Amino acid sequence: MWGALLRRGGGRGAGGLRGLVSVGPPWSQVVSEAEKIVGYPTSFMSLRCLLSDELSNIAMQVRKLVGTKHPLLDTARGFVSDSRNNLQMRGLVILLISKAAGPSTAELSFQHSMVSGIYSSQRSLAEITELIHTAFLVHRGIVNIGELKSCDGPLKDMQFGNKMAVLSGDFLLANACTSLAQLQNTKVVELISSAIGDLVQGIYYENSKSSEENSLTDDIGISTWKEQVFLSHSALLAKSCQAAMELAKHSAEIQDMAFQYGKHMSMSHKLHSDLQPFVKESSSDTMAFSLNSAPAVLHQEFLGREAWIKQIREAQGKGNIMDYKKLREAIKAGKGVTSAIDLCRCHGKRALAALERFPPSEARAALANIVYAVTRFP
Image 1 (cartoon, rainbow, N blue to C red):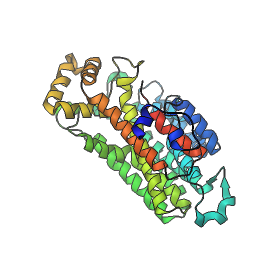
Image 2 (cartoon, helix red, strand yellow):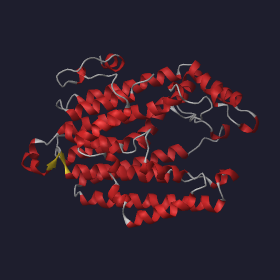
Image 3 (cartoon, rainbow, N blue to C red):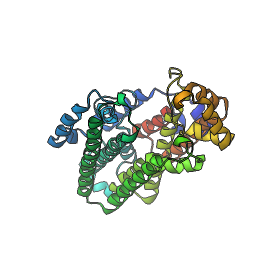
Image 4 (cartoon, rainbow, N blue to C red):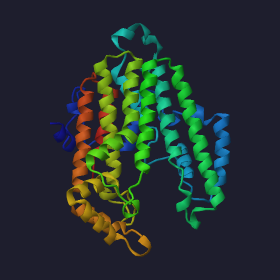
């Protein structure tokens, strides 16, 4: 039934998920409408931290990297404007699910402390989650000095950029941990701490290259891919959604439903992102893509490791320059892309199923529309 919904859609009903339009508005409109529901644009989620004297000083130092290709510059630009991908998506989802769940019966006497149907502690949690995510984005901007080319920028500037990525990422993470302690909830601290541990483990897996074929591709199946993606992309949102329910003293069942929504929606989001080079009409034929992305991993699973390596070798020209157009066509000719789309929609269905436990509301509808947005393909 959910599969049909994700493919087909229908008219708006009386607040139920079955009445929502699956072929709904584009991502930017979904986010804009959701921000109105929670009370303010989540692009200002971590504004207090970004305007602090310490981070202002870091921003001044980062300006020294202008003219180089250090990835920290792209991350810094994303703090200010990112029209393609909403960097504050995690915080927005936490606020929406907090509003969708509402107060628990155990917390009825504290409803006066809610603003737009959300507790202040839940808003703080949304900010904390964004700070943690941003800290790890910054840390991911550390470059391998040994692989640099002369066009990337002077060596001393790139080394300076690495130092700034480490220090500024640590600063954001320290701020998040301080705010986390101020929530004074042991279970929430445990949940978010474990999510930080998951992130570290996930990034370790991302960076632990196989020794074969110049480390271009890992010899993993889709089940291993899903385990690694959960750690590096889904655990933080899933556990933050659960923590938001804990702050409102909701039952274990509601906490689990929030966890399931966060997990499966973020898995769909990652699959949707991985699929863009293969389904986006405006994508350049020469655009690079990860050989460890979901379509490539599924393609390898169907094709076999040896045949996949052979295709990679055939797509490599002189100087090991990859012909991504040729490799993309090879993957599109197989079952990898369609299987990744099916997997994306499967996780979307599971996210929608988790929402059924929440009462009908604008917030629940917005959460469903987020799922529809990341399970739509041209």
